[in-house]
Length: 123
Image (tube, rainbow, N blue to C red; front, side):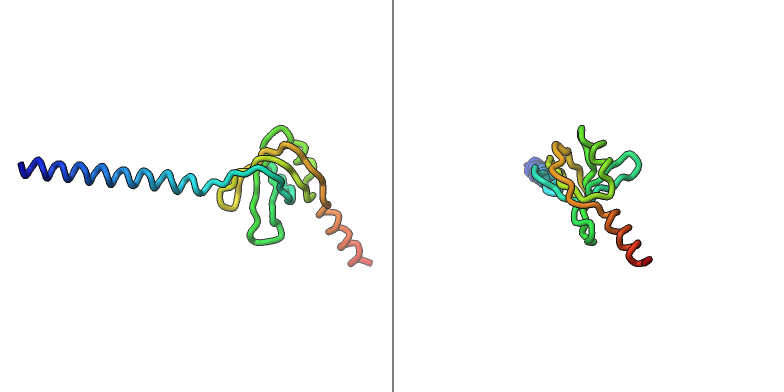
């Protein structure tokens, strides 16, 4: 009888411990992925076949979104420009992905300002 009670307590404790660990693992994983739909403003960067829109690009807190979707090539053509796009974002830490549905507008060209500043300093 003592063995049966001891075995029952052991089984209950084992089931409880495994259940808590499994739930905690799933819970923290779901919290780390942030999904949203809306507009994103950022600098377009191209690295090989990958196209990125970098929000808060002047800060150390920049977040890079890898562009996906049918407008990826159109966004790549805007390399070095600050643009505003509309789409679904998924963020994990300092990076994420965006499925661009629409390029809302081109705000300004970063390269142009740098070359203008260089030409003024040469005069």
